[in-house]
Image (cartoon, rainbow, N blue to C red; front, top):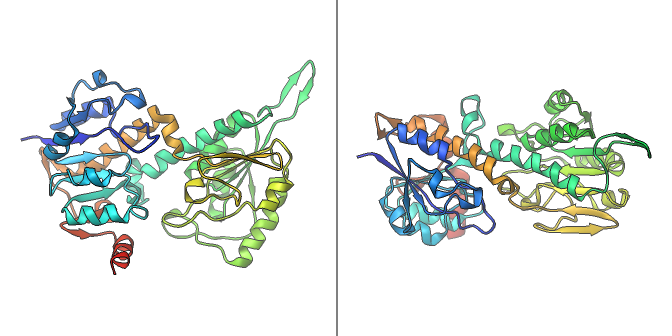
Amino acid sequence: MPIRVAVPKETYPGERRVALVPEVSRKMAKLDIEVQLESGAGDAAHYPDAAFESARIVSDAGSLYGESDIILTVQPPALEVIEQLREGSILIGMLLPYQRLQHVARLKERNITSFAMELVPRISRAQSMDTLSSQAAAAGYKAVIMAAERSGHFFPMLTTAAGTIRPSKVVVIGAGVAGLQAIATARRLGAIVEGYDVRAATKEQVESLGARFIDIDVAAEGSGGYARELTEEEKQQQQTILAEHIAAADVVISTAALPGRPSPKIITSAMVESMKPGSVIIDLAAEGGGNCELTKAGEDIEHNGVIIAGPLNVPSMLAVHASEMYSKNLLNFLTPMIKDGTLVPDWEDEVLAESVLTHQGEIRHEPTRKQVEGDAS
């Protein structure tokens, strides 16, 4: 009997992505996987049911969950959906374990094996499975487009009969995947770009994209490719140097986030008040509370003439390509588990061992396990 993979319609408010696109559905069929898609699952991402020629379209979500070996999602399923999953089945998606402790506890109780794609280790072999990177690339690109829409300035230098227009100055805070994509996009639009990151190792990457690196003489490399938290003295040094660059910027795009922790406050109210009226801040860290002290998640506000945007779920705004990249991440994650048409996860594999959230009635991700047990005690 072939492995059955289910793709439900996303129910999270505002979510437009779908976990599987037609191209990847066809590739799964070649692996002897039977894909079952809830009717309308791809509509918001402009992938209609008719495009999924190799999938079986199912109108009843309940039967979809109950009959499937593997369920692929973008957002974490609701608690009522978890109740419908077949015991022993596998759930793969971005499960937000730090935020959905009750959901994790229920997955454990129902004996669901779950993999959180955001926990996939950032190692060379797993790059093709790295959903954090693929979705951050979409967010970094979109942030620049959002800034250009809100700004009253041209990004490139323009020579016109009315005179020469100077290019916009853009400061990008955070040189991870989102930040580097923002730098590259702003440069393509012709802006003068500066990039900043507390990890000194990113200097070469920033400069390779044609931007100037803002050096505060602090090295804060942490584990897993993330930055460590700065000391109070380092934070003061960071703010002193950044303030000058932010004051001169027409656009600031901030991308600094810490998994499972609030976003670091980098842009103070005083910095915002030093900016020129009409300047724009796009705070991609809004979901974690924002890098700017004034950010309001999900809102555009104006403070002292400066527009501060705190967009949420930015990759979903690019649903077509964000879904395509995410779907390929899932395929690359799932393929090594399948041997001769049979699902055989290798629990010695570093990728599976680090990304598994629940398995055999246990919470396998230690930080989440401690949080759940703490809540229960």
